[in-house]
Image 1 (cartoon, one colour):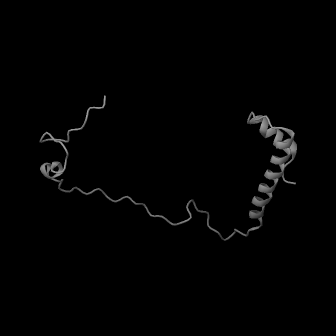
Image 2: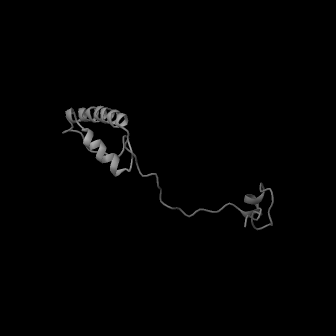
Image 3: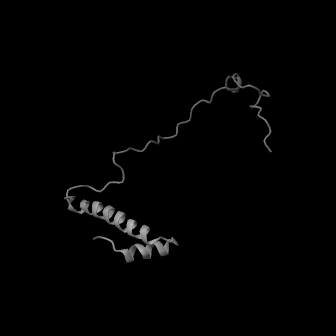
Length: 94
């Protein structure tokens, strides 16, 4: 057995959980099953496996900033529901 009833009681107490006798027994069994399953990972030979932080190799998605010509104001405002010639006009929120 990987976990005892006393350990489950202790953790429940730390979490301020009031577990009945039935719940303590059920949780002890369930947690023991989970810990036994996770312990199977210890059987894997991982000495040649490189530690990773992601399952897939990822590259930085950022690019260098490049100065570019901005879109002309009149073209940016042409599809606006309402504008004042300089900017979008939106409903006042506050």
